[in-house]
Length: 435
Image (cartoon, rainbow, N blue to C red; front, side, top):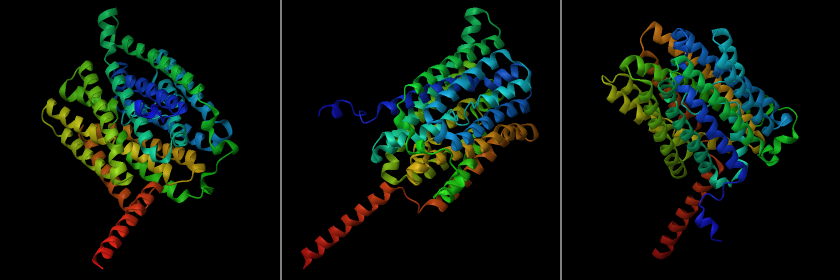
């Protein structure tokens, strides 16, 4: 009886805790190499266009494997796939340690699905499996809160990963290593954390397999909610394209080139921005429960794009950093609301398909973002990609709102019905008093 009071998060199941912990470890690992990746590739002598292609190929790998997830999760099992993708990423990290040729590095990035995070969230083919599994581990009224906790842990991992990106400087000072060698050591750490994630996934119970465990293959074109799924995921693809244009690696490179900021300063900047994002995600869940999931997704997103523009044209480093941090506070408030919304507006048997198609769409859009950024950077200016990203993101937000403002999840329909009943009851009571 007293447990619920002493442990407010006791409603989170063991499986959910394992999934969330593995997600936090993965995002820590991805962020730790995400901040340094463009700097590392530059150290190897690759051009800005080659860096963009490398980052795009990694995101394309996520899209490819997410597509495989959508087709085969019912046959192969969610837990088995979660472990497999972690092991693939660990193997890819070893490949990065030894390889120096661009074609080989790009192949490793694809095969290991090495997305260093458009928004710092650590995209992975494991993510649709996690998102589809979490709703079955908690009551419906706690779904958005659970996704908020999932996102907060992920963002906290990303924050500390960004801070860890300053370790190469310590390695250079302590062991007399070159910049290149100190960067390579980060890939060994990345491998280790991926192995820990694989171990955590292996401990998850068979209960997460859900209803799809009885299926062999899933044909997304025959799903009852296919029109809704493909429309939403198409819009999310546009959103991810714009987010991946502002990939952490490229923003770090931009700060370094424009303002001459050192690696340790960049690590601190991204650490703070991810901590602010983690704080905002919990606020997002509270706003979503009060004002609705879609409203929270749209009306926190638009201001973040405006602050990105402000950072782009800031004349001084401190001002650009300030605007970037405000943008970071707002930019991911849509994430738990979006995950909760997409899992609520489709049937339970469609959740893996929804999550995997969403990841395919997002990663497909995201695959072009870094290349588009570096192409615009080379052809026009370093500020051009951020302007295009902000304009497209605002367009996406408005389109999402006007297309889906009348599509509500069950709990919001129930809340509105309950409010209508209460209003009608008060109205009847007033009439009775008057008569």
